[in-house]
Image (cartoon, rainbow, N blue to C red):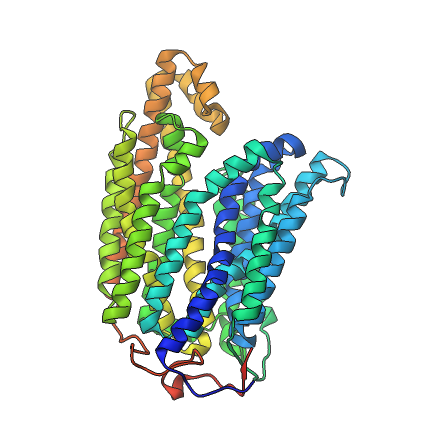
Length: 536
């Protein structure tokens, strides 16, 4: 079928709503997976063994996702997003199937089963990177920025629901089914998303001369891998001054230093540097990094606080995040509608940054006596900030580039947020460990320091219940104080978000509510990429 003339916006809305369920289901797969698997990990380790490799189950998935994110965005720009998106779903399903089969005598023993699981999780992460990036880019292909907020708000709301449902689904699977269903559950859901989108999704298919930047992709993959390993291992598995961490730092610096001139020379760079010449794009990339750094780095400690200090169960700690996710969902829907109606967006990241700072400050006030309902109020404030920021940053990034770089913009937004989160978790983890050791030593003497050295294994309810009352009280107070210090540090990084957002220039969103459209391209013909034939 050849490309037709643009159709009016109402027709486009019908088209988007027809494919939106498939897009949401694909994104929910990526969001649910980590939370379901996290709940099932004790059972997995109990059957496969390999406790010393436990962190790699998470690290492999993060590496696969982060490394592949920029590449998925670029090849979607080059070859059309429908085929690439369906390929990412297939890879994710294939990785899920392999993860469910880990340890079935493929390598001959429990330790081999854990090694298999780690390798298969990396494959799963490769697919997840494409799910997250291209779902947002497809929305960008189908509708202009002015209309995009409505649909991205719906997607953000579904992501919030997935984050709530993850621990509940994981708990049910862990208690009533075999842990392998934590992975197998992705197969029917992924199949529905695949078939739905294969039938209903119709996007422009570009036929141009392409040359993949394999050197740039390789350099970027090596550099990102080194950065993620630094943030994962630094201060935990290896000291920050160890040769392993310093060696990884050298690898990251050298490869990324070579990457920049390579990107300036090649015809189709994997990460076009010209997009950073746009002030809004650069600012929003920095904001995304800080958002991931402050928010995700700090939120990582909320379940620990709720389960140890406040005594919540693992499943209930997931439910206790409901105020944050609910606030995020409501605000995301409101912001999406407001942007579509008014075409204005600059105020939202500023307001979101202010709420983010307020939420971090409130959470820093928590101690061993803070009630769960108070924590719920505090995290609801933080959720308001997330609702104003999450999809608005994506929208501004997409509006700052030409349509041909839409995938790059989407992947860069996700990439910087992910890298920021990795750095945040690492830095705040070091802050937490240092303060916990110092606090326990001050409260309980040398015996208290041995509690900190025990790590998470001493913080489960059964272990806490066996401690003498005075030692248990001291440990809980030290935990609350150390987690509070994490949020104090997060305030400083969060405060940069509204300051940077002030300098974002409000450029009119392309494609107003009465503008013609139909092929998903920018309404300005001069900004459209070369396209010869038509619809997938």
